[in-house]
Amino acid sequence: MPVNGLGEYDDQNVFAKILRGEIPARKVFENEFALAFHDIAPKAPVHVLVIPKGRYVSLADFSTHASEAEIAGFFRAVARVAKQLQLENAGYRVLVNMGGNAGQEVPHLHAHIFGGKPLGPMLVSA
Image (cartoon, rainbow, N blue to C red):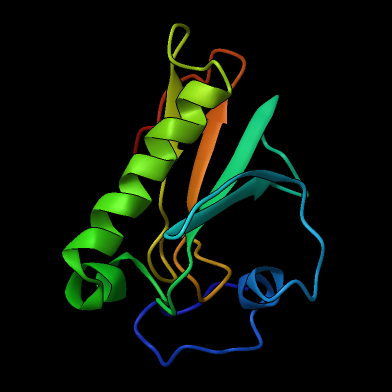
């Protein structure tokens, strides 16, 4: 179910529970700023989620409230994970959904990394 992306942070969301270790995840990478893990319903041969460790509902919330170190650390983690998964040569896609029209489903900022096959056009024509 899509979420607004502008509301209050919900400490009971699935990613908060993964960060606390209450729900297992197939971890790919972790540092002080971010955690990356395989998506449980992959949409491509490689589908990894990267989440910041801070309590941020969406990209709008993150870009407004996160520190410069958190912002840099998160985006560097996304790039590091893509490199670690050997996606750089063939290419990959990074997707961040924000709000209902974009289909954001979890009220915690997350970036999807897709790869492992040609991904086609970004969106269908309007």
